[in-house]
Image (cartoon, rainbow, N blue to C red):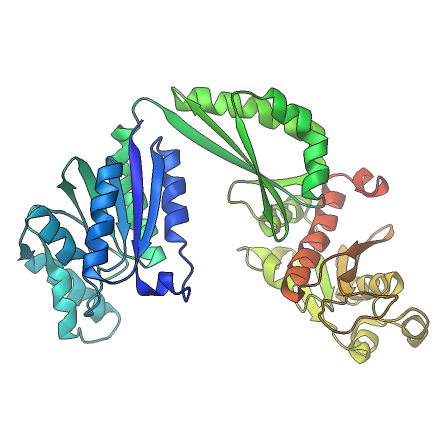
Length: 420
């Protein structure tokens, strides 16, 4: 199996002002291509250090993927370092300058003279076009390694990787295919999920399973290495079928699918509608649901009822309920869900109310206490959540839990009766 090294360049990555998502994306792409990532390095915009990192990567790997340092400013020195390392001179390509100028014209801007440097490439390099930015990439041979250089802007890098680099790497897998499958879960903690499926994981000797906690749930990544893609898919399918039979109610999606996409599909298929009444989540449920194109077919409205007055005036929550139980209570959550369903005329009303933190708690109602409620044609369902102490994470988890409650109802109302 071929081995690869990843080199990401930029001072902003070292000082933490920008999170390096490029390395993670490239590592995933490489493994999917059947190429083993063995080294990831990050270096600042310093020519000597870039050269040292490049030499190290070339000594360790058959393939080197580099991102960053292709811009028009004084600290973008990646091309110069590569040219010096390979003994190439930088050559001007008029057609590249035409492409760069055309991009500025399309944006209604005049091209600065500094962008002219982006039309220069190492003499023996193969140019990798950049249709969404001004920095072309390139590939060349350095020693025994194939080196691919891409822009540091994630959107530009991803497109170049998918359309120009990955096809060139297809033949480097050495006859093996590495396949990943991610199962996304909600409504269950990592330890409980592990206890539920532990024996299945231990018996699956030919598939590696990684548990990946996220803010809103646990992802299970299934990985297999096989001689062919079909063999890999079959081996993953056997374990996935067993996992779904054991923990299927907790699995809401796969790979890149989000909770809101899954829920949107279920709402569309059932030809039903929902309205949201949110307090502690501040409109996050509505925001996420409406991220999906076509959501206007099933999302009727969203009400952010943060104050008690809004809960009363817009949703019809009574003074008696608020005085007797408080804004953060099962009773208020139920009244909010029923109220938004009534005023909107939708099939469902979904509500959230809680203490996101870090302030606002009492001994009886700590930070992280959240109630979610689902008003449906036969009644109302309320769930109490005990989340953490971090405000943003509490909002994300509460929003996901609310959507998951509706998802479970749409999949099988019996789940609700079981308390899942």
